[in-house]
Image (cartoon, rainbow, N blue to C red):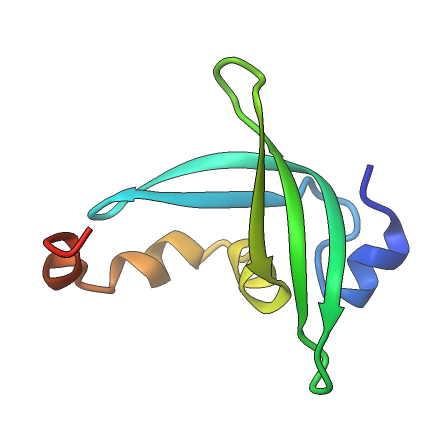
Length: 96
């Protein structure tokens, strides 16, 4: 359960499920529901370092991910996938 206070502090939607998109390859993303958020550190300018608990859609397995609050907030926008697919990953895929 993600409390209303944490949602407000992190500028996340109050009434919607919190979603995390994992980059798979190229322009593909996998969608996960965020089940829990732990604030690890808050920086002076307001952004926070988070540990989030994700629930996978297939086997209901859980996974921990570390992320900055500003990026998680950006993931909640309807334009997130479009914004991210405008990035050319071609040069980076050879390095991973």
